[in-house]
Length: 68
Image (tube, rainbow, N blue to C red; front, side, top):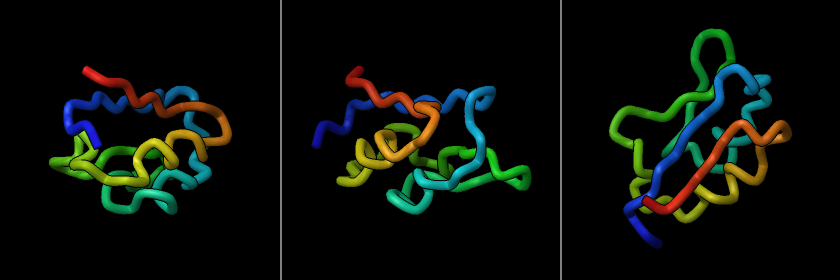
């Protein structure tokens, strides 16, 4: 997997469903309000094979993964 990835979370769109954290717990977590966020040091996904699946699992499309 390409390690030069950019991950963004639109916190205004996120509804806190948690599907990203379930699919890729090594990359995503949720803050105290349930909004998704990246774990420290995981800004590029750290080669997690489930990263793109986590983005696809978001029911509102709040996560974008792109090649840099």
